[in-house]
Length: 472
Length: 54
Image 1 (spheres, helix red, strand yellow):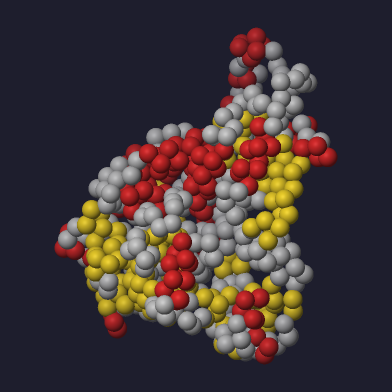
Image 2: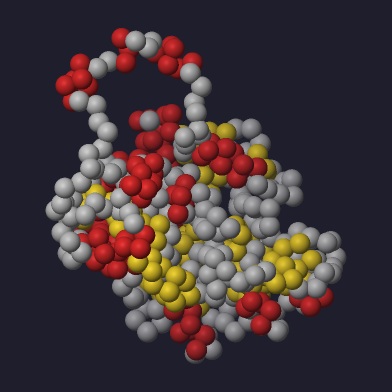
């Protein structure tokens, strides 16, 4: 059965260079952030395990912190049995075609029930939650899925939701306007009731990918998680709500409680996926009633706004591919680059497009997700996973009086600092060559020359390694 | 997020910002991210400074 412990053991065994264990004490007050960002700047994204995290107030903490679990698209591709470029498409197909219903097990068999704490024994400050950035008000849960239940149907919903740990038994949660968890909460509030919720933290990466699937409302994520994992997700009744709120039995930590209706509290600022700090806003508070965890749990965290948050784009790539491909069969690949914070920019690659294909693809793509803002369409001689290639096409294949499409006053992200309110301007640029017509030839070396070519005849490996890298 | 509103904590002087929703929800105080002092936004040590809308 798949879980985070099992995954880390297998990764250490099969690809030990991809797991970096940091045994030196490290402060959770932005020091972890600095380490992750320094490695990311070098394009190094190992799973990081900090075995001696130190709380912002100087307390050494007992449980290890895991970072970058999902940061590598290459590792995600391996988990999905595909390659780097096909992650979105394969993810889309697996979510659509394969669902495995979860099973409910006895609590005695559930690793997440090895330790159960209630009432005065609850202390969320024993976990290595981080202060990510300089304006954050305290330790945040950023790698936790919040599971809620639609009160009308009893169907569960799961979504990543940030939470500021304000007291040892209280968390302020930001449920974004368009999230299904928010819709559930709106229903409870309309009835004057509190909402049962459970954060679950740490699981196998495929469980995390399934939890991010874009599904209908209401539709359970648990079967999608099982579909990706290739085995039923094991669930167990929560301590507080029993079978009315089932939680993953193989998670590392589960935090249960009531999201209180009616009242709002200041929450944030928080360094967000946009790469900017979102402002302090009013949000509801979760009163924690029980915490359950493994004896030695990994606390998993995500550095929002960096590579560790990139994986959330696979679900968007999947939705785009599924929406565009039937209408524009020339679509070959979809990519949400990190330069657009893996949300705002979309690169599409078409093979031998027909007239109008690029514009059609732009229009469909812009409607798939409120955060998608700019769409760029390329021919398939452009590697859309190489931004230098993309900018080359933008520079040499577009005339902006002809190739730019602009759509003002559309639905946008409230966290985008360039929007007024929540309305944004979306657009697209057709960076393809004119379809079915002759076009200038790119500079190329004759293939007959390249056939015989070996750089080592003229430049040794040592000489090459000694040459300083240039900025492009 | 569009327009944000800079506040200065009257207790410790830390500068940070809040969203329009917090100012409009008259019953919700602001809390200083640095010292956790709670206060009405209009008590900001430097007043409320609005940024230009996006």
